Length: 255
Image (cartoon, rainbow, N blue to C red; front, side, top):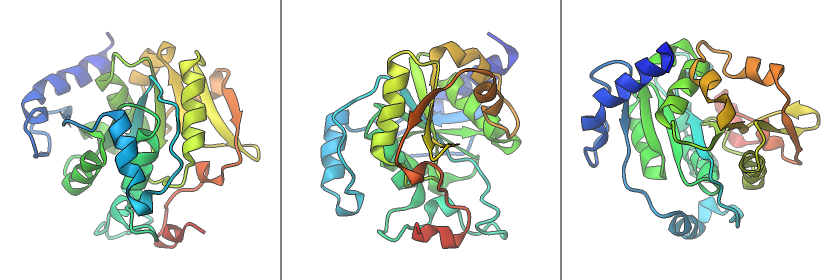
């Protein structure tokens, strides 16, 4: 166990009391992260329930992955609201669904568990993600960037067989794309990513072989170095949603 993983594990252990309190999400009282897990619907019931909600009318996949989903939701969103008064992930899309909720459900339709990483103090977002079906982690390391957030999620899911990592501000990724990436990981691909017209997008799949490298990540570059230095299973998709995110209020229109 390296130093980064030891610090994350220590933080999770310190927050166990918080993680087991029903119907409450609290900011971490100790470093490094605080986690909350709550009972969720079984995967088949989750699919049926989502299918009954009109504004979440997305294709129901027949495949359930053994990988774990990771949803990175700890960004500042400064371009969306320079004053910091509005969290873009809680902003509604044209169908009324919030950005984070839509992104989370696309993962949850394919993988049995999604761990969402948020900043301390983002209680409203954490509650929304938890209600959507995610397990939520508050990461004090999130201010250091996406790499640190991803490391926290990987360390918190040490028994995972692989990970499908997505961004909470990308609500238009097709479920079929998530499924294709998850299948590649389940079939043994160490790295897998979707490509649309030559551009790599999200979600990105990581096999368990890369666990130590992922736990050691820090800063704001995420896993780019890992992806650029290893062979990636390339999945060609007709899905522009893998490149589209919500950066400004105008992006909410999805056009």
